[in-house]
Image (tube, rainbow, N blue to C red):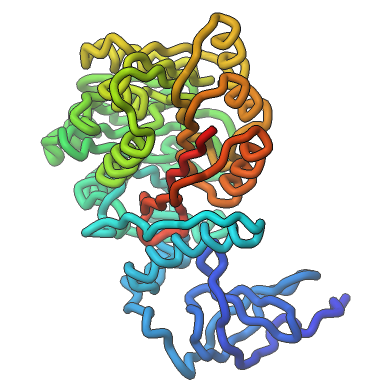
Length: 454
């Protein structure tokens, strides 16, 4: 059935790219009907083919450029765009930073919010920054390969240099892949749900240079385990921990419940803002430590702490923000729903001899209501929620405690703008500009810090 749209699959057109979506695709309109085109930048004049059509929009691909953008740079490797590893790699870094600032500014304008957005804080070296990799292992044309899935598919694209990862991590993945080949360890097959090894995860401390390798297996039995360990430790002197994680479920969830330390320690260590953190296979730990330090420092500065305040950190994780804030405040209370993370946070506080940070397991909104009942009066509440933003109940609970300030660290501008309006209804307004920080160069992700004052 042909859709009643101005474009149809396999047709080709000429057009001018007018915008970039938050996923980094160029937008061309034909009779006001949007077509989203990867690797196309605003102001470019292109010939394009239509690849897929839905009722309200279509997708296309560039056939040829009649005029290129001044912000276009040479693509390092088209696989990075194909797999979504670096969807903005064709955009000059200075323009990426501007794009991220504009994304937030446009969303605010759309909702008639008169709030300034500062220029994005970027990186000197906007690549090779990720301190953690998780790569699937699959059989491709009869050969064990590691790489990344093509966008929107389960077709593995073999990749050796991941561009945005620490090069030492890339090198470690190749060592593991070659050992799996050498000892004929069978990779997992999604179709048959058979095979041994599903994923290789590597973490490396940015300051400590300690490396952890996690082999995620479908089966409890890992053949040639000693030979694998000997091969990894001989070639990778930084390895301090090798863990087997068993995940027998047929699921998109990466890690299973059970970890077995098969070499060295069950954890590795690293530092953030001079604080030591213990990192386990399941720990949520920021993947770009250099930018995380800038983000947290800026959030602490914007909270304008004098050392006398009581601070609540909702979504505290393993205590990364809480422990940094504790050095600038009287007391810090962290809450987090993941019990293991709270154990890590308590352990990290003890290790660093930080006695004024307290952590509890719970839903942030329920725990805050409890603290209020117990008479706790915070001066500042810090929130660093997941992409879906804050639950309305949490905003109610935060406002009920009447802190002077709420410092909102956001990883999704759309939910940030929604939540700013919910806070406004409770009497909290944004009096200083929003500060974007680029935690994920070459991608479309945007982190930012917003201060709401009563």
